[in-house]
Image 1 (cartoon, rainbow, N blue to C red):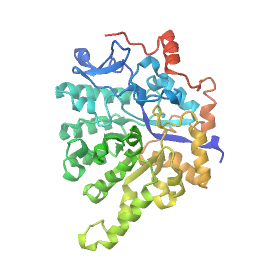
Image 2: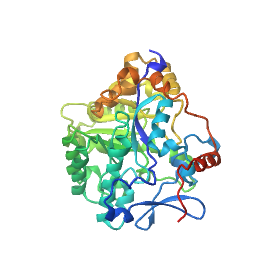
Image 3: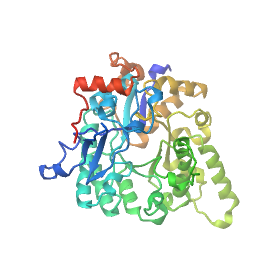
Image 4: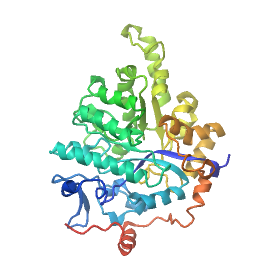
Length: 424
C-alpha cells in the first residue's frame, strides 16, 4: 500500500454553523425566535438565543488555515474564517484537498450536549430550535453531499423523555449517532451510573446508533490550581476520558446495555493499555468486591463497546495490539487547532509506518472500523476506487491550502461577499 491508496474516514470534525442555518428548517412563525448572529461594535460575531450570547469563540474553534501565531481564544467574525468552516461546498473541497472521504461533524454553536438550548429559559422554543438544528445538520449539511458525512444528532438534556423521542425521530432520518456530555454529573446532571439516562441509552441501542462522548465537557472533574496555564485546558481533557471509561465500565451502563456502542471522541488512545492492565488486575485481585462482567475480563467488555479515537498518537499506535486494532479510529478535527489538515495523510501515514502497521491494519484503522461501528456505508454513493487519498486529491488541485492571516481572510471574504453579517 502507498499513502495515496489509503481511505480516510474522520470520526471527529466540527461544523461552524452558518448564519442562515435556520432559514430553511423552521416554520415562519418561529423564525424570529431562532438563534441569530449579531456583530457587535468590536466586529465580533456572536450567536444570540433568547437574549443570551451563546457562541464558542471562533478564535479557538476555527483556526484552520491561520498561521500558528494567530491561534488563541480571541473571538472573531465569519469573515476571518476559512470558508470551509461553515460552507458545506468549501468543506468538501477542503476534504478533497486533504484526501478525506468522509467526516462526522460535532456542533459548535449548539454545544456537544445541546448546551445552548438546555441553558435557555423557554424550553418549548428550545426544543423547536434543537429539532431544527438536527434537521439542518442531517437534511442539509450531511445530505448535500451523500456519502461524505456521517449524521450526528443532539438531544434535549433537560428532559430524558424528550431525548428518547428525539433519538427515535432523527433515527428515521438516517442519523447514525448522538453527541452527548461525556460525564453528565460534571455539569450538575445525573450521572450515567444513576440510571437517569437509561431510557435514552435504550433508545440509542434500539435504533442501532452510537453514543459519542466528546472531550472537553468534563474538565471540572479535575481540580486544577488557580495558577494553571492554558496548556492544562488543552492537554488534560484526554486524560479525563479515562474517568469517563471507568464510569461506563464499572458502573452498570455497559452491563445493562450489552448492545451499546460508545465512541470516546478525541479521547486519544495512548492511555488505554495502562488502563486495561489496571482494571484487569483489579478485577482478578479484588474478588471480594464481587464485580460481575459476565465471565469476561473488564478489558474484554471495554473492547466490545468502545471505539477509541485519535488524531495523532504514536505511542498508542505502537501499542495497538494491546488496545485492540478493531476498536481504533482516526480523526482529523477540522477546523480546530489540533487538526492535521491539509497534511493528514502524510502525518498519519508516517505514524502508521513507524508503528509497522500492516496494510490490513491500516485499512481497519483509517476506515473499516469506523464504517462498521457506525453501520454506515459511503460506497453506495462514491465508488471505492474513487475514495482514496490520491483520487480525492486529484479533484482538488485548485484548492489553495496556503495559510493566511485572519486579516487576509477578512479582506478576501468581504470582497467575495462571503460570511458577512451586518452589525446589529
